[in-house]
Amino acid sequence: MAIPEIWLFVYILTFHFLLFGLRSWLLWRRTGVNPVTFRNKDNAHDWNGKLFTIITLLVTLTAALYAFGGRWYAFLVPIPYLETSVLHLAGWALMLSALPFIFIAQLHMGDSWRIGVDERERTALATHGLFRYSRNPIFAGILVSILGFFLVAPNALTLLLAGLSYASVQIQVRLEEEFLREQHGAAYESYCKEVRRWV
Image 1 (cartoon, helix red, strand yellow):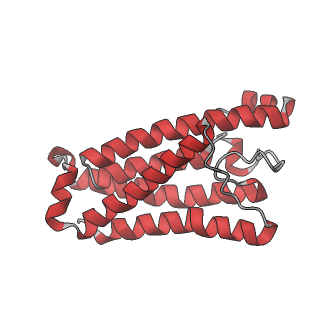
Image 2 (image 1 turned 120 degrees about the vertical axis):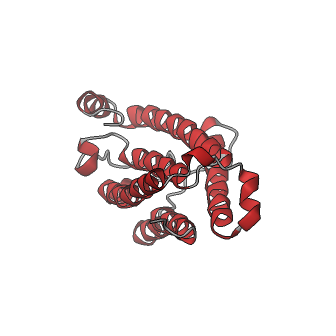
């Protein structure tokens, strides 16, 4: 049974609202700290933030075209041999499991959660909850979600977005690891020895 196209658009809006919009607002309201750390500087961190923003906008546009675009969706160059009910449902399973997984990982970070590297605040090192099994459960969940997105709407643009997301996440993980080494020193090194980068 196919899931109506509009639900992909609803999922993407819900994903961005819950995991970035609402989560950012709740943290700011509780602590007074803006969790968005990208500042439009000419460095790798802020360049990656721009790439992340572009990916987010293109994912939303793609979901809108998938739901409402009609003939315009053909311009995204669909991949017909991947448009099977099995892959479609697998994509939905990945996306729907990634959403609560990322949300729980954000909760486990508590007030240390940021979008990017926060050089102005010293935050606690998250090593409990999902962080006992992965040093980057939030990023892992994002990659699972974008893979699901590609399987639900397989086309040239979603394939490109999956590749760009993977590259962007890998860059961001390494930037954050370098920062955490500087901020937490031996404690972070010990954590890295006990917990793998992904799983």
